[in-house]
Amino acid sequence: MLVTGDYLGSDVVPSVPKAPKAASLMRRKWNWVRDLPSRVALRVCNDSRVRRMLGRRYEQALADHESRLPHLVGLDAQIVAAVERDGVFVTTLDALGLPDSDEVLAAGRTLAAQFAAEARSRAEAGEAFLYIPPERILEHPTIFSWGLHDRLLDIAEAYIGLPPAYDGVCINYTVADGREISTRRWHRDWEDRRMLKVCVYLHAVDTSGGPFQIICQPDGTQNDHHGFSYGLADNSELKHRLGETFTDKQVSCEGPPGTVIFMDTARFYHRGSPAISADRAAIFYSYFANRPRHPFLCERSGMARRDIARLARPLSERQWHAAQWRKHLPLALRLIPPARL
Image (cartoon, rainbow, N blue to C red; front, side, top):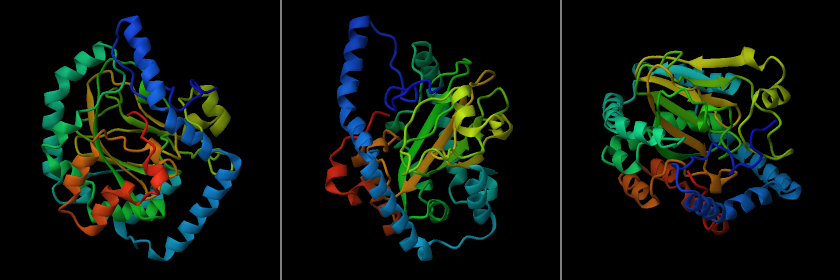
């Protein structure tokens, strides 16, 4: 069964540090009120009539854009084929050969080292999901702009089937405390029907270092016909959705610093396994359709919209449109505040 039944009630949403009971209760009430618009919007989008309408529009958009999809060759074509089939493809920054990769890796490692003591303190205080504050990433704008390289946008567009939206960059930090909490439990991401994430390891990651794990079988029960629901899944739920042999399709992604993982975190169950031997830090870049099914569940980087606008200003028209994807939404969707990071 699902560990939690409500997408905003699950541990996928970061918990808060331990606090006196009254303050903790007040915070939970405020979070419930704040997330009410996005909660209601998800239920509306999953109404049977709305689902059918959204599904028809989506299929038509895919058909209309098919002839304009990028033509990929070599490694890039292999990436898209593997993610389509298995949900994951592992390579390295050196193999990709994108400009500024060395600078991004060095800056990310520096930020992770500077954040390490704070991360451990916050984990000790009870925080379940830790990420380097976005304002620190802003000091290294190349980290943000790296995710907008045309080759990455081509890969995202070829896989998603539509012009890609770029949901920015987040540097996750996993403390080696062995706890199986939050995103260290099996889940699917909620932004869109399918999406692409690009993960760059900042540390060497072995079996006990908290490797990214994925089950290489898509969850076919989630679609516009049946609707979408989200929560953490235990083994019984995974057996129900994926079959008795789902563990045979589990892949653990290990590698040195600079390992790059392309994966679809919307169609496939995945997690960051609990770190035991060493802390793990990784950069995550996110892409989905330029009109995602659930825009009110996007904007997961924590970056302020004004900062994204500033970073996108000097970029090409295509890059600007990808980073500023919200500006192309209908007004009604733009008015719904995004759920909490």
